Length: 442
Ligand SMILES: [Zn+2]
Image 1 (cartoon, rainbow, N blue to C red):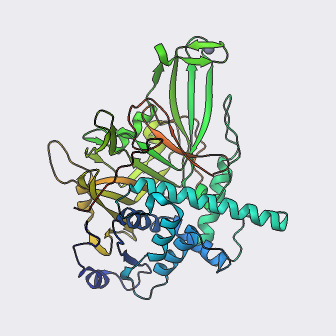
Image 2: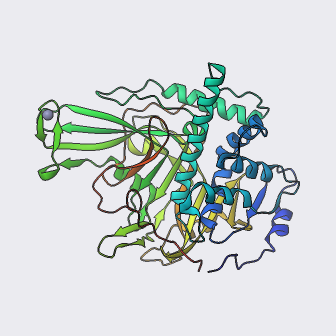
Image 3: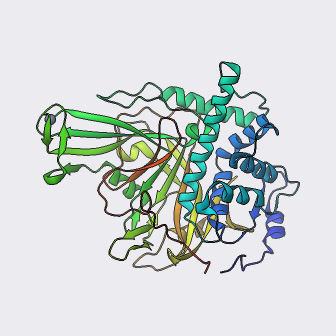
């Protein structure tokens, strides 16, 4: 097992020379503490989304007044990167890793972990912390305010205002027969990442439609060989028929009936986090295998138009991609590519390099006709281009089909309920505790 990256960097000073002197941004590699690239890669991906600004605002608001948590450790790390004198360098996220290992024993070892599971844990855990803190604040003051006291960051305030506007615009759009209108605690995690899917089931006997809303913080997408992200997403709108032993209990007919089922994307998040399901659990083998299928992901994603032309669209830009490198689930490495100020950069633990946009296609995966590499996009972060324009409270953006899972939060925001919205006989997550050790770095 190798603890540190083999490639040692000349990169820093070279990169620093290439950056415009006017550029007010920091590109810092993160030291690997023994197979912690799953963590480094996700932190880098998040740092270059609007999430960073909200974490920094949290840091400003709480100035030492909070007890140590994974969130304060993250806020300290982000603040440390953002306040460096130099633009390029390396930092050791030691405190964060220590805190992570103390908080969750699943990460308390030197094995490679699943970057998606880490991402999932991180944002849900942060949301929990924020909800708890607000509750404590409310019980102290009698009445809480979720305001931005103490924020002196214009960008952050604008982002927060946009998020709040977006949240407001989406509130109350919960029509549907039995729409789940349980109130969600709105933390900045929810404001940024939370979208809503509607499960729609139509009884084929009485034609009644039942709708149920389900919130998600990220979407897990089934992938196919030589496909595009768009075609994978379009599978969301596929109609699934429930028949034979899978008949649906219709409450209008009071009996089991044949039905059709599909999911629609009802509310689009500000940052759409997509998880390509590259680790498939094969029951016969009792283990996970990597699906290295080539999936082309666009730099720009315009969502509702993809599914339904009658709907106004929300345009997203690809801002970061966590890439899994390696040919199998038991060995591998994670790196991140990021778009920042018009530049594309590659973060490989402590190494940061500028890359040409034309290299991005190397991370699509292994094509059957054009074998290129074992490095394939695993987590994709698409950020709304104009976050101040509220996402359309769409009623007809079909989404998520049978074979997709949505990671949802409960009404209390306190758990990571990964709901499997369908029948796919495999899953690399959820109740299956046989978590793959994605191993020693190649
Ligand atoms: Zn019926």
